[in-house]
Amino acid sequence: EIVLTQSPATLSLSPGERATLSCRASQTIGDYLAWYQQKPGQAPWLLIFDSSNRATGVPARFSGSGSGTDFTLTISSLEPEDFAVYYCHQRSTWPPTFGQGTKVEIK
Amino acid sequence: EVVLVESGGGLVKPGGSLRLSCTASGFSFTYAWMTWVRQVPGKGLEGVARIKTRSDGGHGGTTDYVAPVKGRFTISRDDSKNTVYLQMNSLRTEDTAVYYCTTELQVRGVIDYWGQGTLVTVSS
View 1: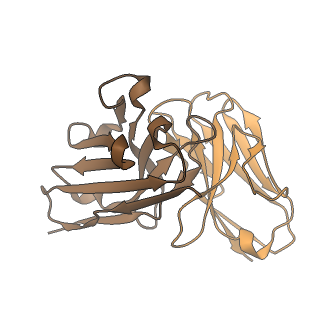
View 2: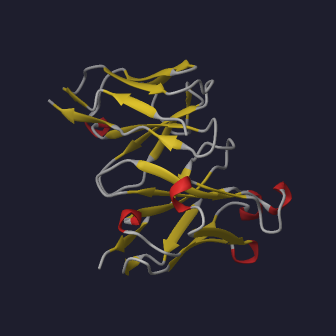
């Protein structure tokens, strides 16, 4: 199965700062990568699909890029509600796999 | 509004069985692929089982499983009830997790809707 490795594990930032999260796949997955946000006690929420497409209702401060094996999620200016855990996810082959998550916490 | 409601979780002893149900509303269930995703509390996410539609082939829809559950879990669907099931047999302590019912409505393979999750605890 395809392994997704996210970095860093934790990102400590202040509101208004820029967040850059990385996801690396163990083999090429084209642009079949999505990003999810998860808050405590809630199900994940789709932010980005197919590397760079924002899902419905996702603010423009969230953007995604990359292809092949290296991907990035950028939050241009952190809002208080953005502090959460972020997961990348590939749909290139079964089983669908997820990264281990990056926690964005308030500095 | 798309709604997925899971039920059937609980405490079970190792080697035991449990059946999860997920009832869907707000979309054309017959045409939707359904996937169970699990999350060990405080840990990451894992796709467990997927069932495609009857029109995609197979009597009840083609199924796929992740290696650790093959031969122990069975996913099925009842389109007349807008419900998908996950029959879990020979449960192990490592199956303890929150199980989410999910679907992909906009783009195949992109999970865009999740249920609230149901907790399965396997412990003696």
